Length: 224
Ligand SMILES: [Zn+2]
Image (tube, rainbow, N blue to C red; front, side, top):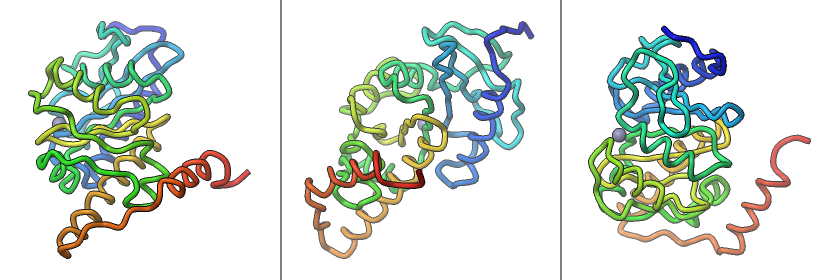
């Protein structure tokens, strides 16, 4: 394999381990879903390979591209959703990690074409940034149209969006943050689904409290 001096093995390890974590977390099954990480300093994207068992892949199976989509390193074919990962991470410069999964409850909402509001639950208010919107239309996997729809649905503030009849795309400043968003969207989707199963609708948290929690996460949560 041709080696590029900018490529870092620790980022390959990060993405490899994130693939296994995605599978183990139940957020997706088999070889579906994909994960990427952008090294902003060097302008490189590390992404999982297409159709390989996430428990079997090794560091050199991770594919490396520049942020214009030029191939840099790796002998494997990249995830079919390379364009979407590039599009989303180019549009949202504050994010570095992108996790695309097919979890059941969020996918139920994506299939119904229904957005998930963040005033359902306080973890949603803290972690999701904005309403989790469905893409405006169904688009085939791997297409430029899907990448464009995902970018549009994410907008400037949401940390996730839903691909119609397909799944979830979550971003974060690091891999941990992107996984947290993935877990929270799925949890809120399940809560909302269960509230509806009671024949009820949710009672929203006031927007003042949503904003207060967003501020609290920025300034008051965790240790000094
Ligand atoms: Zn998918």
